[in-house]
Length: 529
Image 1: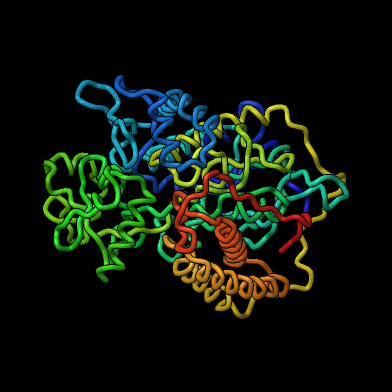
Image 2: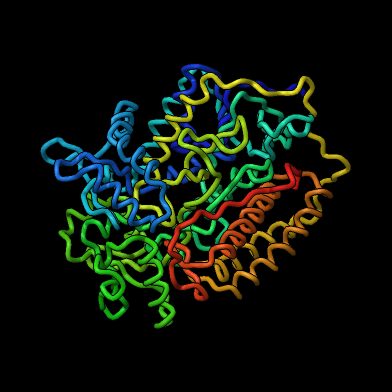
């Protein structure tokens, strides 16, 4: 079939992808693909808000220091400074786009406080900030004449000039239409990965089903440098209830005075950090994990009962209603919570404009490793990062040259047939997610990582064979990417001979004197599996 041509191909429809699309549409045609509906994103699930220096008692240096401390020595200070200084501008852009943000009694923006922040600096809309940002961005994108959204489309592989005898410049992607089964070829001057995180690598996660690490996997297969994938952030407080699904209990609750307690009512975080329940996520998650292992309890409890009930209901209406529907009145009893995989601090290595190590390929948002988060992300810096780097990337691609061969090979299924054994995909998916939780979870060891490495190699061999024999489906693409990302996470964790930030090893409990990134790359060039 004839290749579809666009100026900018965006893979992902969260805050980074949509903001890039809006900005880049001023100087070119933009095609956004999203593998389900445009609202199926991590952004849409975000509760907290956007961190920015807006209060008179706050300062850029204070926000910078909070970020650096949370990142445990691995942040790039230049990147942190860039993001923090741009924060107020990006909040204003959100307002200009029609994003609603809560205000206090005086009409000023209401600023929340979250774990590891020393000041109130998080702008928000109730406790569904991400949903409000998604709404406003999507409304603007859908009405823009230069932007086309292709929903129910999933990236299969990136197109590389290396396949045609050139350098490994990227010029688009093969994309599966999930509704028809057709694999389309889309060429672009710049291909922008805004595909989100890797939470579905784990059996317990706060992420939606789409978070299977697709962008990271595709970039790695093309030869792009990735890194720091051992740093999966586990959010300390996900609702524990048989009918809760993956419902996050925002860090903002602890910012407003919520206290973590054991089943007997004892407050325990003071034993682990002088900041108590407001310690950074890595410390709180490990503390809860340790307490649960010691006691054998199913959960700890987040106690909001000391706060005025009306304030709690007004500040957290979505969380309050969700808990009440499950029989939990958070104004009168503790909320049962456990840690779950939440955010990927590593990803595809980029510069300050989102450019990867492959010409023509950009990465923004959670799938990128910018240097902002280091070894542990500071709460509410993620939406800020998505805004800052999508803005910079949109400016950077304005004059980019088009790289494409004169004749493009269309997608070919070869001798592949329709699958008659889909249970293989389902079982491998389940096994990867379970052993990743057990062996590459909150606390790791050499033995656990070696077990995980052995299992993922076997499973990836099975997936390769299956991928060759049968026609691709969305489930198979996601499994292929999920298994590759799991392999990269395991390998990065094996290479880090220390404990730092989110990564804690029983065999290397101390921190090395020098903080170094863990970089990983496919050294033998692009390949299909």
